[in-house]
Length: 273
Image (cartoon, rainbow, N blue to C red; front, side, top):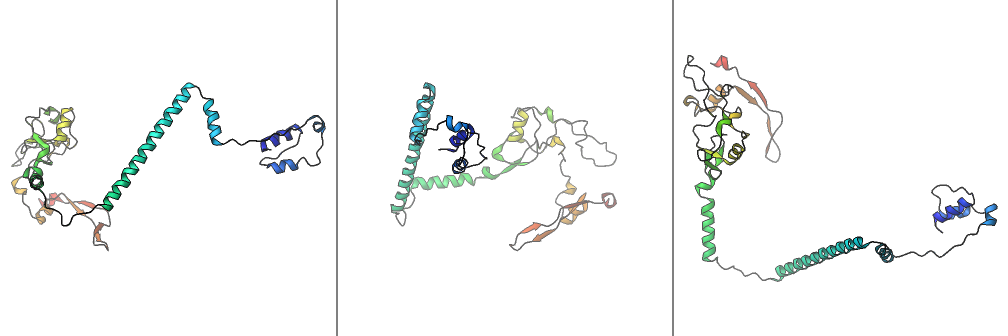
């Protein structure tokens, strides 16, 4: 008798069954029990058969309609294919491992053929050619880029009008005296010393967008005057508008790491000049 059947019998006889009671506890509640239902009701017990999983699956499959049976067969077919593929791959893997273990290696190995030697030499020459590592400047963003990723700006066909920033105060022509007027760079903001354009800037301009690192985004500095070129470290410290302070320590492994934040202080430039 299951717990469910015992509770149903107890309900008929008006016997209260506490929750989470076992079958033995429910049977013990009927000791010395007598009521009107005991004379009018009779309990008939039948053999409880526990069905196996295969019988349950067959009974469930028999209750499916045609579409459900087709879906079941399709899933079973896919599962069989995946299992067969796994077994095939496992067999190939084991055969490969056995071949590697049993295979004999010739020592010393035979020298490479002439075709292989030529292929190695050509590959080395191609990887070490100047075109593979030479860099050039992009006229739009001014960044150094590999020559293989650069193309001529004049042949790109990009609309450079979106790089015009006249009247915004982002550029300034070089002044040689205090009396010279402050003038902006006319036309699109480009690096006049460069004639090429990188791939990323070209793609952005072709889509009608301003490149992220374009000089027109407030990154224009202009050409460095002759007086400020090839300065020593001390001279660079004197003309810098900001000086930095950071704390670097050496750890036990020999490497260095930063111990504190980088602090920037403004230099008194008016006093220097």
